[in-house]
Image (tube, rainbow over all chains, first blue to last red; front, side, top):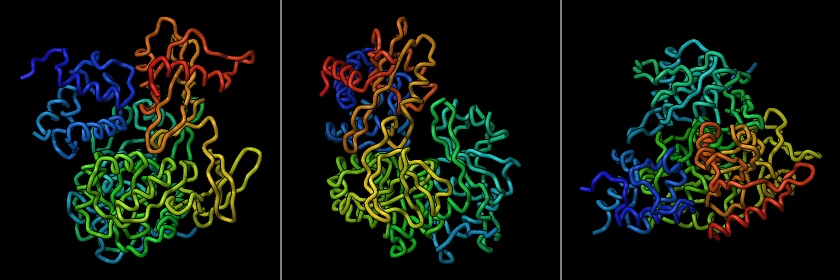
Length: 92
Length: 446
């Protein structure tokens, strides 16, 4: 559906802004590459950050992340995959 | 030399673990440990990286039966495993996930147990070297802290008795902390073995996972966790499952957070104070008192260097890295850590160690880490000021990533022209605070 480009969609930019605010990151949200890995290299987040992001996502979107679902690794591959997961699961 | 039982307080047929919803009996556990012991390579040292808590326990016991020593590095980065390989010849890794390439790997095997599971409870010589914990030194090489079986078993039993868990016989215990960390080892593995409890084999991460796994355990049940997880659980979950016991450690908890946790989980919350060198030292119930009570047998004494712990399962004099005020025979108050120590989410290092690594990066002329003040339950990140003309912040982070645990990576990293060193070459705290204030104002933080 979404073309594999490095440009943030509006939804992705909103999520990027949420992450930047939650974690006090220096990078401007608009500079985040939606296809870069969230963990380790790339955005350089660790598991404590992921927990903080999960809490922020639960409050902002009403989506509770679970790690026993098989897709978990895939979800955190990139901002784009995280956003797709949220959009699929958010309360309609 | 007296022997001490591998496990205590289990009724015959009692559960030792719950794995994927299935109960594993104490006999089955011993049978698997005996089977694994026969298969382990003939070596002296291993690193047990099993992510599954039950498999970790099987590995720990199998190693004990073979008189092998479990090494507990503070992290499992390639760099740290490589260093262990140099110091501990022939060390291998027992794991149930992706095999590390830094040292030889022995994947957790498929175990078949016959009827041999039943049989007497193994006795382990109390002076047998069982494990070695590691803290980061100031030179980049980890400092070893050897533990005998007497120390490990004694710690698990002392905790069980102090916390009064005898009244919840056979309680199920779910932990969100890694079993390779001293707190996780003591509270989610050794206390289970010595107290006849039943461990959940997993380590759920997100609040929704923790709640559903807890819900799946029969009562009585306990949650072993950290301030970071506790805060997120209380903030996210509207409906928390009732538990019978809460245990928390790695950073002091405020009475407000403790009281809220007690009322929403419907259980008393106890806290543990300890360190890798000594293991657990004291406990308290923060909703009731801010004073810590020493575990049985441990005594503190003070001299010009600070406060030392010894006795009980603490087998050598251990210098504690916190400022401590003695209140009575076995109670004390904590007044923060001594200045150089850094503790982030239960991982510990010193500013000296981090500065050593930072300044060993090619192109870095000068650099210093700063630890800002901590707030309750939230994780504070380090700031680093670096003089490195020609290097970008990203390049410095990438170089640090291969040297230190990711939780210690600076956020932010501030490139400066020079550090405000005084005439003796020292960095006065006030000058660093000024620098921090200028940079935070610029970034628009609060």
